[in-house]
Each structure stands twice: as C-alpha cells, then as structure tokens.
Length: 134
Image (cartoon, rainbow, N blue to C red; front, side):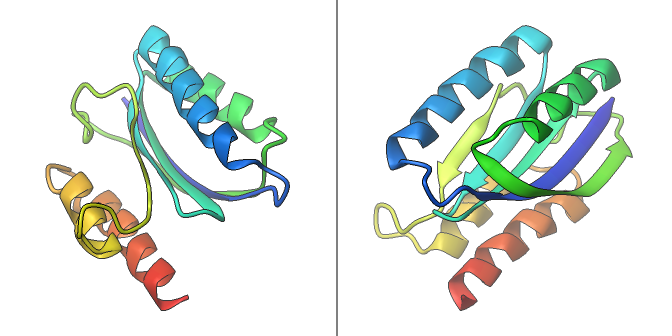
C-alpha cells in the first residue's frame, strides 16, 4: 500500500466556501477509490496524506497536481506501508483553527493520535506548530 504526503498553497482567490466543496469531492473520490487519509487546511496551505493501492493513490495525486485551486504542490513523502495510518476514514479533515476551546496544536495532536506511522504523525504536528509560529 502506498502512502503519500504533500503540501501546497491555496490560490489567493480561493473562496472559503470552496474548501467544503473540496472536502466533499475528496471524500466521494477517495471512498470510491479505496483511499484513506487526512487533509489539513490553515487558510493558506493544504497538508494532505493519502494512502491506498498504489494505482489509486497515483491517480488521485495526478488529479491533485492538475487542480487549479492550489499551487506549489510539494511531495513531502512517498512510502510503502503495511497498514493504514488513517483507519477507514475516506478523508478526515480539519480547518486548522481554534475550535471548541482547543488550541491548533491540541486539535492536530488529537486528529493524529491514532496514526501508526510516527514520521507522518510528526509531519502533521509540525505543520500545526509552524502555523502557530507564523
């Protein structure tokens, strides 16, 4: 099973309502393709992990690279994994912001708590800490 993680920058003209559309379409496509993952959005950047059968992940990644709603897409990791780090969620997602009294770091820690892959977990947690420092 292939797991990839990338980061990209949202286009400045991307309306806030488009994020909900991105998430809904991602969940539909991922469920149909047998993909799982996590998507974080901080108002400027997307950080996403996708995992599943190699062909399905590659097709999804090709679609993402062609998506005009973001730019500067950088592949951070690509690795074969034995088991899913994100369970059976077609796309766990969160806009990184303070919600329900939790800090951004606490929210991301909670979202990544069950991840088996420590490297991927720390990548997402580092994203939250960099966002806080910015």
